[in-house]
Image 1: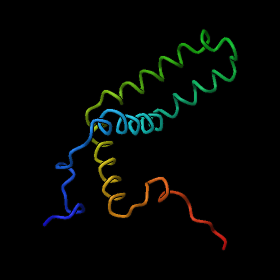
Image 2: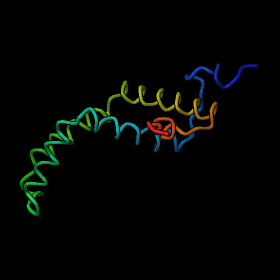
Image 3: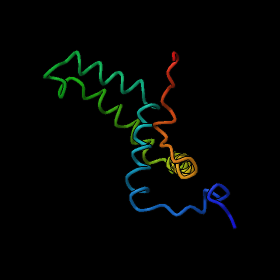
Length: 110
């Protein structure tokens, strides 16, 4: 009998919410990291422009949107995020510890 650990990631059946909400959320977070320079430029422009950011930061906003959209529409990127999501899901099922809890740093002093 095969255990959940031995299950091939390709055979995992994902729920609708996982495919349409959770994996795209992961994609957005990773896309922001990959477009960090554009995010930083847009944030800087907004801070400097104040109320007029809607008008003054159009170029930075367009560049950011273009970068993010490029990643959102990339099927290879979707597959990478899907496989990472499946690995995290299997690890959670195995350990019962959410990914966020595992990534938190342990205290250095006791």
